[in-house]
Image (cartoon, rainbow, N blue to C red; front, side, top):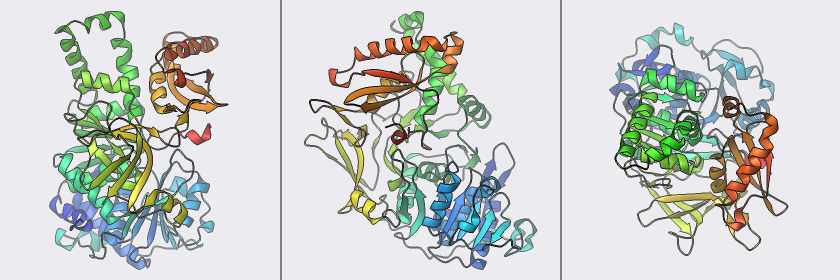
Amino acid sequence: MINEKLIPYLIDSIKEFWNMPAFTDYPGEALSYADVGRRVMWLHRLFEKAGVKKGSKIALVGKNSSNWALTWIATISYGATIVPVLSNFSPEDTQHIINHAEAELLFISRDKYDSIDTDALRRVHYVFSLDDFRMLKNGAKEASELITPLEDDAILKNLDKEQIQAKDVCDNEDIAAMIYTSGTTGFSKGVMLPHRSLLANLIVARENLLFKVGAKVLAFLPLAHAYAGSFDLLYPFTRGNHINFLDKIPAPRLLLAAMKDLKPEIVLTVPLLIEKIYKKQLQATVETPKMQMMMKVPLLNKLIYKKIHDKLMQAFGGNIRELITGGAPMNAEVEEFMKKIKFPFTIGYGMTECGPLISYANWQDHRYESSGKKVKFMEIRIASPEPEKIPGEIILKGEQLFKGYYKFEEATQEVLRNGELYTGDIGTMDKDGFVFIRGRSKNVIVGASGENVYPELVEQKLNNMPYVSEALILERQSQIHALIYPDLDAMDVDSIQENQLPKIMEENRVELNKVLADFSRIIKVQIVNEPFQKTPTQKIKRYLYS
């Protein structure tokens, strides 16, 4: 049982860090914590004028920005429920989510506003621009402002820190956020996260991540996702960090340029981005015959690893204390190499239904191929006769657990039973509580003799083969097939023609099968012309290809 509450953390942070920079729409000007506090109070007055009550739903649609973060903080600290909608959802899906959530207010960027039919939003009373907080619609009609516009509000400009207050209206079981998933199974469900879930994640972060007060944070993962919402916004805001928002996940080149500029200490990312950086910047060098031979020589290999470590550290801005990845499995080869050069990176495990953190360990303690160690408040058990050796479903219990899927009792009962969350993930756990993910139960392919094939593990190996950008392993007609999207950049560099690809990929298949168990060998390879569609954490949407 957690005895603290979430809202005081938000309000106290504004007061404590009053004169420090809080938000920047990178590379623009910064808003101070004082600016944030005054704007939050302005939004609270706006909510009151609009008739928002405790538990009212406020939908938020747009890319990462200071105003997105302001709306999120103002909503939760007011006692309403925030409904963040991923900006890459289609207009039809966006409208459906807003209606399904029964949102009463909508904050939306103008580019998204122009693509949806606001007349079809059944419960929305007011629509506001996320760009400048101007009212866009009052019911079905164009309307004037409810209160004095933000930039003209004289009262707002004179507020001091003692006037930054919030009503203490929420219990820990009240719903703080309702996040609609964009998972690999294809159907969005509204995950109801109570205040205690966000608070438990915040407490775990404050005890483990240890961001320095005032340090710069680079927030490029979608804030509408639980991972970034908790650890790129909520936690750093309570540490007085300067959060720099990028409106999308950048290409590796642009990400590294921003890191060189900002020199962040802690970076949250997804494995795919790290794998791309490894492939583009390091793999060609470390896999040359000369380098492979040198790395086998004692002492010399340590010098080489240090040189590569230093080069990569400078590429990330030179100030990295820890690079935290999560949301999808890490390629084993990339992880092994990062361990060899002692780069400060670690891998966590989470899911939206836990707000999101389940397991984590700092980079010094992290164990190879694990997804960290179970965190405070969380209990984990493996549905297996030998949890350390035989994979089984990962089952959870703890303060982080969600309260169910909104208006979807059948789906709730399927995963929440007797106070436990049945994750659908398959894994093992060692005696020290380190979790090892093997795959998703829905993805497991059962061989002819009953053997389990975990496609994610085969994909990791295939992704390391020549000219493979990404791969997807599927079962078709009781056989294992591979879909492959080729690495076009590598092909250009090596002057590989398109008509050479079938032969290369067949050679890859033959080579890979030599190291795979008989029951997991690939029978057929198919080359695809476009990258696979992915979730915000860069997991492939498998249901689109089955």
